[in-house]
Image 1 (cartoon, rainbow, N blue to C red):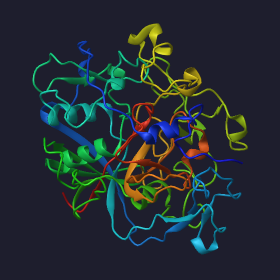
Image 2: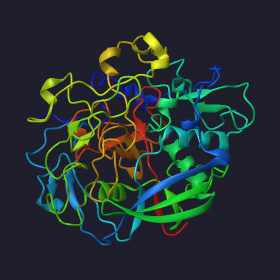
Image 3: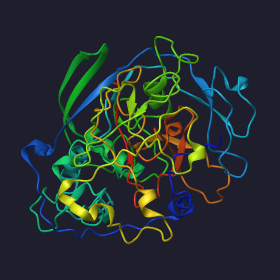
Image 4: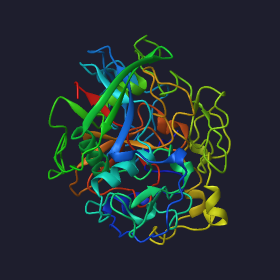
Length: 440
């Protein structure tokens, strides 16, 4: 069976070259006033909360996985049967593609239970860009519900008062994952949190998992902190703070089973050791999951138009999708003018993200949504992928998206993207979650 990396979502396989060649920024022009209820109000005075799952068992073994992308010319490749998990890379089939050693972490750490939400990102925008000038491209027009009714989650108002220029587009978006991420945006978010003030940290237990909830007042300082944004190849600069997960941290939280289930203690999916989860079904007007009792569960598209790519035996059905009721009939008809020409737009953009946490299927450490919904940006630099002859600082991404089939949630499904040139202008399923190391 042919496997695709996450970039090759249904109907967009031609977009990769466009995406890595570069996407220009855009000014913010939507001046419509936000209509937000009290239930979806963003954090006041720059305050946000993060519930972090505690990931223990330091010094756990790593495993080898065969990457889905990385033939000698950068093509997608057929993978061996089974989970694609090997105790050591020396036991894996010989390259290409290469075997990647993942998952071993020799310290305890925390990782956000759910991805960063739209409301959290809006609080961040109003904190670090109080005058609405957007100097670091933290916002672009495609995030606007006017420009893209289906995926526009954040409204910009140039005439608004200080620290009020950005707002959740509609109440339904408040608890959805922020869907327009790239490495630069997520690293600046991490800097704002780490440079901020921890107001409280509260431990708790739920479902047999350990959590710590941090309440943080964000800092307006984004360019230096745990990441030095003057360095395109930046990685974390210290051993304490709120960070983007590394490749190993993210994989361990999603797939490593401290009870040693699965294959060599690793699950194939963040929702289970061997079999893909059921696809979520969404309320078409607000994106809430309506089949939460159907476990295991994840928000992904079981109906890949490239039907031969569907994992044998995986569940089939319609793509999970919704559009704010306020958008009306424009939802399926209005697309940004700057999308690449020649795309089959209705098929390329079938699915939408779901409210965080409502799929309810935990990873071995109690995180949610590490499979499906949004693909998540990782801190770790990736090697230059085969077949690309221009230098970039590539980053690993992981987790699948709402519009991708089940195999993109597998442990072997690593994606690559240049950290300096993002897919955000064409890919409304990119997000991130924070991790915490040391004691902030």
